Image 1 (tube, rainbow, N blue to C red):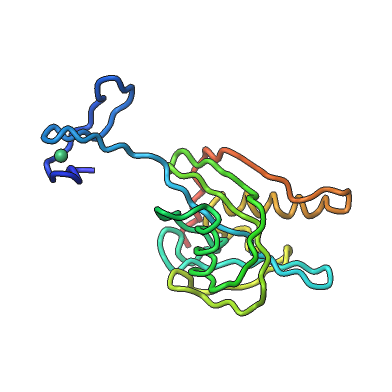
Image 2: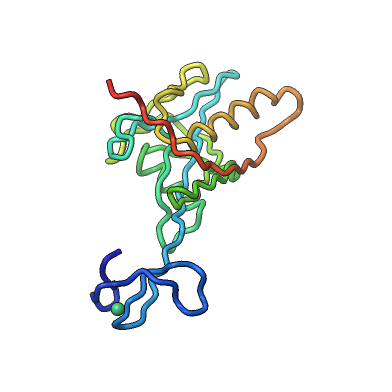
Length: 192
Ligand SMILES: [Zn+2]
């Protein structure tokens, strides 16, 4: 941040009185510009018929990680709830019609100042289509998941939890709630 969004005066980075960490402070109008983590909300849309399960993934049309595969997800907007954000992002990125399920993962990603949440979701039909931010949308069986071409660590973690829970279903388990802190930046793919 360079300029005050209230009065356009240049801001300075300093610790305000009574605070304990640096903030962008406007010395002209005294506004303190707090910066807090952003929420990224998405879904795990699944389609299951005759015991065979498929998961919907979107191929990103935008940076970062253009061309890599992701669960439908995006930044939560003001004036919406997390479940509304999950439905909206799934509709916008995949054109998919879902029945929203329970909150499934809550993943802290402190080094990028984000918190990611994914909801379970069931597809109502297979009439999906890529939105503006997707190059492609496809259904994947577990064996077909492009693990090496996933866009973000939170996508990998969420899918790993999902298939691990599913593998334990026959022991009477269910889809539990999972929370993790992801503190390592993702390995960049080798340049080829
Ligand atoms: Zn100002």
